[in-house]
Image 1: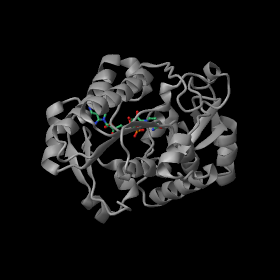
Image 2 (image 1 turned 90 degrees about the horizontal axis):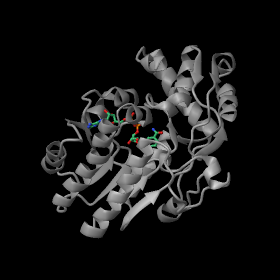
Image 3 (image 1 turned 90 degrees about the vertical axis):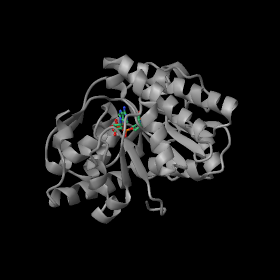
Image 4 (image 1 turned 135 degrees about the vertical axis):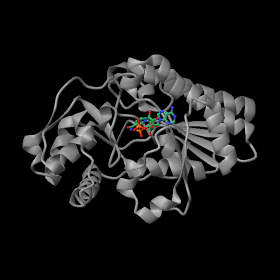
Length: 305
Ligand SMILES: NC(=O)c1ccc[n+]([C@@H]2O[C@H](COP(=O)([O-])OP(=O)(O)OC[C@H]3O[C@@H](n4cnc5c(N)ncnc54)[C@H](O)[C@@H]3O)[C@@H](O)[C@H]2O)c1
């Protein structure tokens, strides 16, 4: 919207709570909501055709715990759902120019699988979860849609996105920690070790810029944000919100995904990418949460999950 677009949002969930936290009512009225199920090809095809969709940013998905609990549903949403997006684009080549879709850093294996060094572009994919395997499968299908049908796409592999609206999935812990500190509640992040925290504004811009860029092929990009260990995140949070020292902690194993990943392909193809420093991202997130709290509209239900 900052760039003057009038987006359509396709989601099985008709609610717009996350957007309402970020947009004014006037801005929200510009967004056109389409309720649909990505596993149903007809829903996707008619959304594209009836609304004249030219660029698709495909983010619908089930997160790691949901795929582990129900791999069949995970595959229907994450794999078949993504195929539906590509298939709709194939049938409406007259409309759809490209697809930018969310892959994930979960396509990579744990740090020690790469010798503990920065994981270079093109390193072997060693996903350790159904979720990661589904994302790898999507990257393969995207490649075939380019080879067979010339459909250009970009798969973005975020690690852990943080910021307002990040309220589910295990890596939502840092965002929930910021929210908990704002409202003065204790909160435990359920993992330790190295993480790559990517500010949501930076991630959003990457998606939009890939849609705008004159790319050709089935690209996959690994973005990079602030690569830190969890105690460093906690220390930075304490600088912004000193009460975090007694309220927020972290426990559990490191996540089995290497966090130190090379983003040179993205930097090269987009000609530089913004990386908001961690403290600035925490400050901006805090300011929005505090504003919502002041207005009495801060939803804290996610802190219970
Ligand atoms: N958040 C991260 O740090 C992160 C990291 C790597 C990859 N990703 C990927 O990025 C994408 C977005 O992540 P998120 O954190 O916003 O996830 P999220 O789980 O918060 O949101 C996913 C959205 O998909 C929708 N959805 C689920 N099933 C659907 C269906 N059948 N039809 C239509 N819509 C459906 C949900 O209603 C929800 O709005 C996902 O594909 C996720 O796997 C996220």
